Image (cartoon, rainbow, N blue to C red; front, side, top):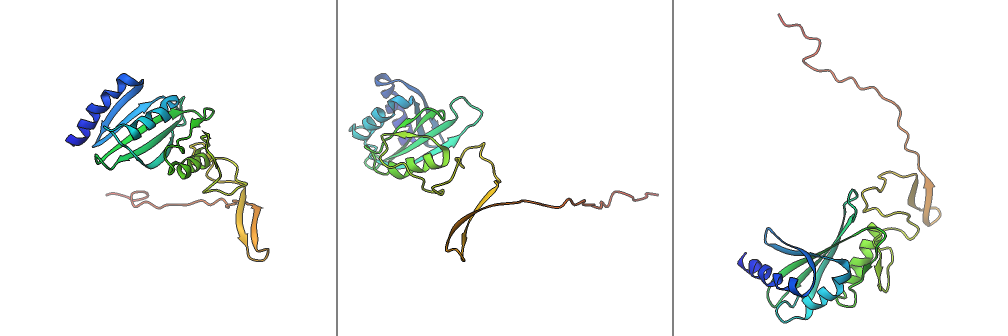
Length: 191
């Protein structure tokens, strides 16, 4: 815990160099929230500066807050092996604003950025290969968004007879049923 407090105090000095919105420490996790325009420069600073040396990007994750103005939170999780510290860098964007790619700084960002684009539709500028990873190439929509429908009208399945993937219109018919749940407390006479 003291190691993270020292990192937190050390990162407060970073606020003098660049405009960081907020510092947070939550259950042994230090994070900072910043403007997306400063993302590449701040990550480069955190990677190369001798006091930080966050040389490993362990994960990039996305969260959809559909009711907010900046609905997507993109979280970059960094690791400093030299100082045995972890840091989360957070940015908030809407669906129309592209995020600068950090693939030039961390090669691991290639997969994570493509996955966030595939699931949430957040576009990363200067990304060399933004492709669909977890959904089909003809897939429409972004399943990680809160407003994505849970049922659809088209089903994709593999056909053994055609030896390929076929798309068929799906019908989700269910006949109306009336359930009568008998309760022990109903229709009983007490003396």
